[in-house]
Image (cartoon, rainbow, N blue to C red; front, side, top):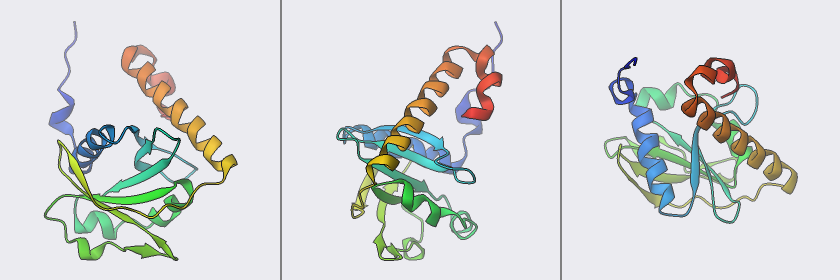
Amino acid sequence: MRHSTPPSVHTQPGQLLARGVCRHMVSHGFVTVEELVPTRGLRVDVMALGPKGEIWVIECKSSREDFTSDKKWQGYLEWCDRYFWAVDGDFPTDLLPETFENRGTGLIIADAYDAEIMRMAPEHKLAPARRKVMVQKFATHAARRLQAYRDPGVAALIKSQI
């Protein structure tokens, strides 16, 4: 049997935040996927699907540099009902915009183990056709991840799709 290095050894700070966010979302009845591509050129850190079909995007920022170098986050707004920033307790939250083009953003404080919603993002409901596309993308992404986990031999075949 071949052994590999545990994933936690190579986990980046943003991935640790995402893990805490995902754990917290379970307490709200949501399921989550990480690194979902809603459209070409965009990849959200965490997408959460709620019990009533609501779609939240949570963008994890591990440092000032991580935030200032991100030029694509505004493009995520049109792919969700609510948009959140997730940062750790030491992050300078005054850097994070509370609104963008009359659309509010939420704030989550997280660590590798849990999170807390500090500011709820206002809801901007997706159009039904967009919601259908996003739920299908979410399901496909989750199924591919599960298949790659269950059958590492197929991981290389579907890597470009996850």
